[in-house]
Length: 91
Image 1 (cartoon, rainbow, N blue to C red):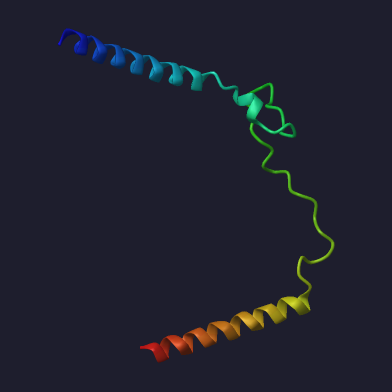
Image 2 (image 1 turned 45 degrees about the vertical axis):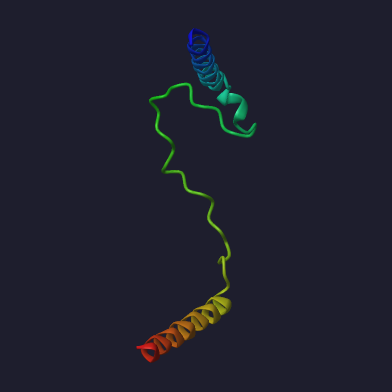
């Protein structure tokens, strides 16, 4: 019986050591090595705020031309009307 208890204690101690070793190994990973190379450096003065007032450059042309925009809006309105009719029919 004594050998069985010693074996159980040995397994318990080895398991605890393995868990501690894995836990400590996880803490040693370098977060800086995981970031992409093209990220911006942190500001030297941490009390400065981000430049939220800077706007992106204005575009000279519309993202979607007006004629295509009108066509898309008409298609969406037609789809909405079809769904409304289908919902009334389902009731």
